[in-house]
Image (cartoon, rainbow, N blue to C red; front, side, top):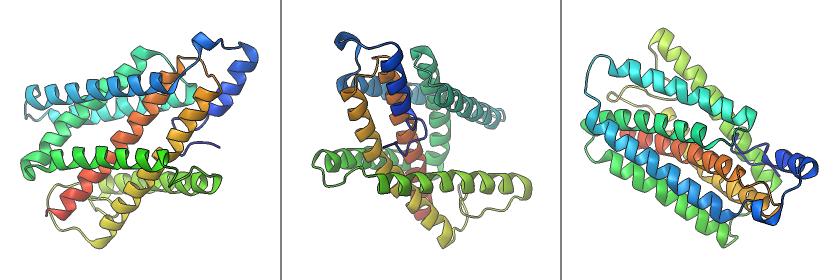
Length: 252
């Protein structure tokens, strides 16, 4: 069964190919602990970079350009790492640094308008992640093919609609399912869109946990622990943005 996280989606196929062609010894095999260690390290690096960007990057006219540049660079890295199954630590670390820059500057903008919102979004993000991990460990929520199809379809739809909505906003200035301004009235559709995105993002962790466990059990090469950690980081950042946006709607 595949993960709903597009980053981790083809990991099963890669594992089967590498085991058949190269073979993996017990000492070279990935473990769940390897993924946990690398995920924590990437999260710390992203958080430290965000904190530095929050304090150091000045509020100036060029900041929007820097944000756009880092966002595009992050998107390019996601596509390259995902499509080419990149497991190089420097590339994954580069993504974490770029996202930290983006998160730090953008989060500060939200914080200036809505004091305390960033702490709420961070607590909400890790609360959802921890809650889903506990539900998965207790087997109260199981990774099934039906859940995978549902979550994957929902996430693809969210990303596609979000992209169309963003292009429409850049061309016409109109804001539909997602509101990009930090102030102003918000209708009920953006609320629904954000809630659906948060639910889909939360459920995707269950599928990611299952895929990581199966990859470790199937003895994927250890370098794929970096790839799995990268996929989990992408999911956490996606969830953070959705929660931050929803909280900004609520506080208007």
